[in-house]
Length: 305
Image 1 (cartoon, helix red, strand yellow):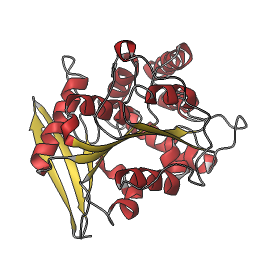
Image 2 (tube, helix red, strand yellow):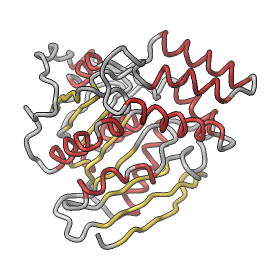
Image 3 (cartoon, helix red, strand yellow):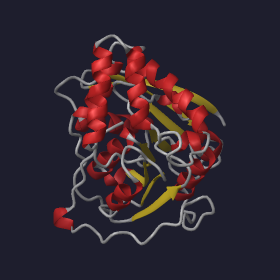
Image 4 (cartoon, one colour):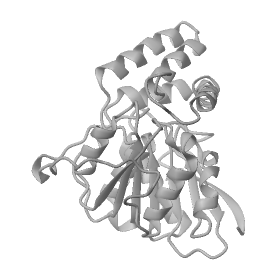
């Protein structure tokens, strides 16, 4: 590893930062990782040992994350993609391998639709395909607690959204991850002036990455017990991507990069380096996929955790 560089940029009145961890001898385009809402550029150290033997690791504080400026009311998903494109221009990379997880998957999917020629390979994990009434009701219940000054109460509710409940299904490292997610979430919604508003906007606004994606080799993957969108919903979403593979990691929920760190990182890098991803010993044997969504009617509604 030859060093770490942090760059601060501006776009459309927004200030944002990105970080590059350099590989000694890169053999693939850089890997750009975009995480969940409010997840910043310092949250991807788990990937370093898997990425750096092959390429540079790039991560970003998108608007609203870290010390970056939150979006204005008139800005949305297209602005997020413009920020990613400004990052690529500043990085000097014609193409990148793009990893999006959770909210970041919605951003990455839209970026790939806008500029497929700039994406060598795409990995979409924990894709928030659609938010049902149960999750929406949970959010508003948590928001009421936040309005009453009870940030801890909000986080209690968010844990019901984010994590598979105790006893429902086996999840690796559940208790440790639960404590960590709780701490990170409390810091995210109460530690900055815009944290709660940014998360609320990501839940209640219609982000709608609609339609097909073609021309970009894509891996869609998730934890077996994802609580935001089920494995079945994400498998169906994968049929709207022309060149896609779908994988499920067992004994994990929406926080698969914490619960099954090695497996998730290995799977993503196998995809980015063109190695086989089928029939790996740590993947769930998946039944036959549903029939492809007709091109004229393919549409996916997504929102963020």
